Image 1 (cartoon, rainbow, N blue to C red):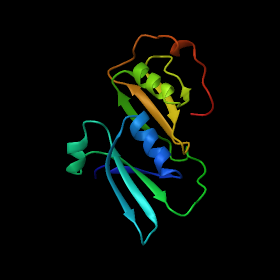
Image 2 (cartoon, rainbow, N blue to C red):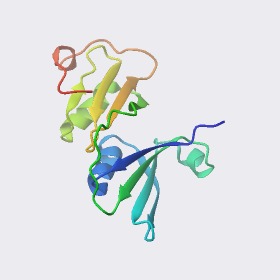
Image 3 (cartoon, rainbow, N blue to C red):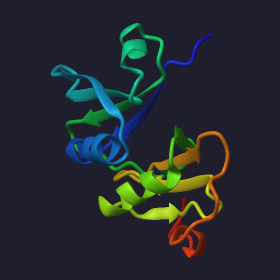
Image 4 (tube, rainbow, N blue to C red):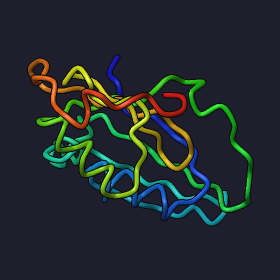
Length: 146
């Protein structure tokens, strides 16, 4: 058995691609429209995993956009997506500067949570162990649910 991908249904494809790619930093690997089924699939991979994705060996996120509007509730029902990052403070600052709310700031220098436009929890984990606590993160409160 081998892990392949996680599928997330999205309500606004442009906003979701902006969040996952331009703000979070994933790379769009492939995109395909399915006229008969009236949906679009966009596969995303982590930077540096493009060659693995090409060989179908990299885990990916599949954004599924149904062309006919549907209401999706309970984005946390499946849990969350998690990514290891080289510098959690720099990533959180980039996200914050991009207008993303940091729901659970990296007060411990190790873990943070944000949400996608469709309310999907994204966990960010510091690679190699915690960074020393630093402001403004150390004193930031949690915001909303994560």
